[in-house]
Length: 507
Image (cartoon, rainbow, N blue to C red; front, side, top):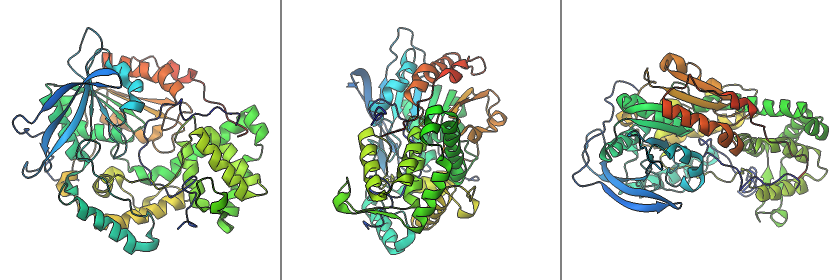
């Protein structure tokens, strides 16, 4: 293909999980293959001598690695203890400030420490004058990580969904009580770890769901927060999942508009909107079947509208992958042999390292969080924009979650933290204007909550901002913000100077 593969060169934040059906690669539509009023959890005292810290080397950098035992039930402090794992990169420079930067990972379900190999280069610049602290959220990575086979995210066989979830709960009974694996409980863990390490005020840095987790921490422990940086996030008061079809459609429309204004892209795909409409109508009438013998993955594949929608949305989550959407649509829409075209697309997606499908292994801790926390509200009747290409997919997924959540033990007070807490803490928010999940509008109203806050809308960037945008502009803005605790005085002119990646016109 003429376009350079992007899989090895781009820095990727892990996106907030939007459930996916099996799509391109394993497989596009695999049909053929088969709360106010409760006391907030506190930063309770750790058992005596439970802090364990030792010198270590992580990604070639000196660090301190350790664990802290905390109560699984933070509401009472009684019962089972679990270990929370952390890594601290000491400040690299000679002038160490007392307030560290604390990294909150995405998901829910991503391990902050597990992300070090891919994310450290993106945030290590914040480590010059401040320690950088990464804490595995309870239920992830080295903090009593919980895993189970994922149920099929379809209600075609409710008995199978029930058996899978009940089997998971039974297997975890001796190691975890899922009622206590919530954002609020994790915030309490983080506060306890930071206290045990001798830190007072801290600077929060949250990405995607990590921006949600940071807001929960700030609400529960407002006196601990010096600054808060939220990348690709949404306010706690906005139901995230219910807005996704609308904003994903907006992101797709922006790709079409940018292609139409780009000489090379428009020349190669002059009828893109018509081809998109024709492709969707064709797949609705007759999905494309790729026999196992011709499949690059050795499995029979059926491409339907749900699989197409899921793959397009995944591509839209990155500015450097959204550029492949016009080529994908054109290839499939104009092919005389659509099965052969599908095989070509799959091979090229594999070769380029582009986002693809397969069952998203839903992290176990997603269930208590998504079933009980207001930001994750997922009511089929409240989903925005029935005209969106992504609407039917998300509506079906919401119906699945309505059923699945009846099987999950309710966290109750363990999930309670309430709406965003008004505060004078300095807050910097950066959202891409082409984000199909957390656009700048997701932070509208932030100034009413945090008067000393500033929202930067990054032109053309998506949920996972590309390396050029981050390294040329964003990281310097965040460094200056954390150093001076003042977003208003930032010179953000660099945002409009980062060139967006070019559209490929051939594979």
